[in-house]
Length: 387
Image 1 (spheres, rainbow, N blue to C red):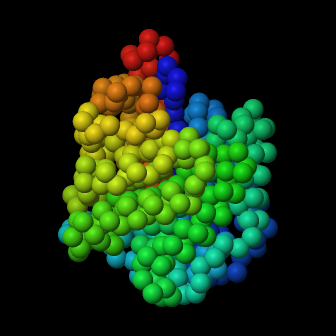
Image 2: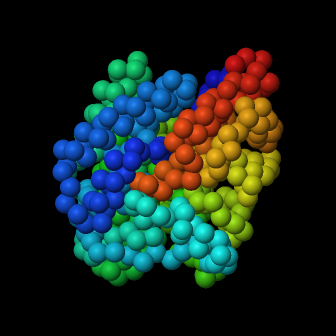
């Protein structure tokens, strides 16, 4: 912990159009040139890292640009996935069909990787060799070194086992628990490969909030909370012996503009969430539905040695937040914590969680991130007398 508000983001950043097109073709089942994909991804990664460094972000990553999405890419690294799932749409969107139709005409148009149509689990799930994740980590190591950064100041993401079992239909295992156990064992291979390369591991876990109004939309709240606890136990088991400061956990309610009036309150899932061992917990606190939830920490404290990475930038709107707005948000959130040094500034979610699906225009993304960095400086002066 330091006497200033440090900055990071939730992971995914905009991909160039030619890279989006390749990812979309591959996801659709076309054969593509793997070397062309790798070359485009490397160029995009260099640019992404450079721009994060130029903006002044403290904890950076590779933008996930070499992956088709934040979780369906595992089909290329694991056995057992094929076919196509039909993912249930979010309950808040079903309630407002005119808005859903608007999204289908706009956000879902053009080249993109649809997270509503991921593959299914049709055979035994197992992780193959670690060549792909090792190559991804080695590439990021080399790029960081070129910008005077080291791996300790960067993170590499991987999905929660819960988002895979909730989104990618089970056509092989006896039940959800057996499927979850198999996916967690397979993901542990990738988790530990990332850690071996010296990076922080970020586990992307929208399942721990969003699935309340998706997979569990028509079930009792208690069933969903039990699911959150089971996923948390699986994550902890996969990372036994890993210092918690090496782990970031990103929890959100879905990175889409929408009503979000079916989102589960943070208070309802907090007792299960806090059992997951992580040094940094990323939560949405900028968007209009969840901006108030920092008040939870006035009475129900963060676990010891955990830093709250508060979303102070909304990733679904092209409004560029004023730095003073960011600073005000950070100071207000800090007042709910027992120590403002346990606070970092972040984004509510990623900016392009699947290739081609983004609500915010590329150039505006970087202006929003710059506003976040400046806002963190101003908040630091207000909280610590320095920035």
